[in-house]
Length: 140
Image 1 (cartoon, one colour):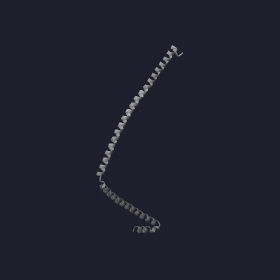
Image 2 (spheres, one colour):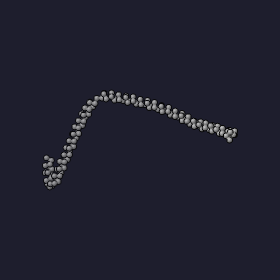
Image 3 (cartoon, helix red, strand yellow):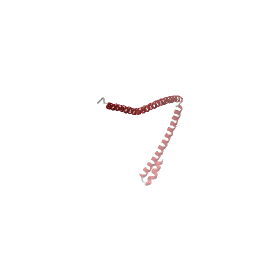
Image 4 (cartoon, one colour):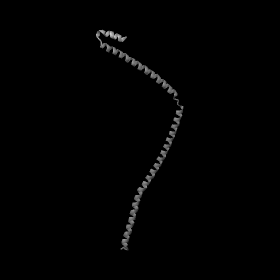
């Protein structure tokens, strides 16, 4: 049966058909791989471009940082705060003196009101005929 020309032809045709199917299948499989490889290649190119951009940005930031530090050093050497400090101390002293004066005036007014209140209290505690005499003694 193996040597039958019809069966030999059939098996040969089957083998050829299987080979064609395998080639077509592998061809279809290779198409997505090729597309994936192209996409992968473009992604890698994009990654490289982004890395170079990142490195350029890092370099710019480093230069700006150095420039800022040099400006801060130059500015700190030029600034003299002693005049400002003395002016603020003088202003603080004058403000303190003004507040002391205001506090003394307020306390004096309170003492005057307390004196008048005590006179009213003392007058209310005595007889009506002696009220004028008590108020006069408190006034003096």
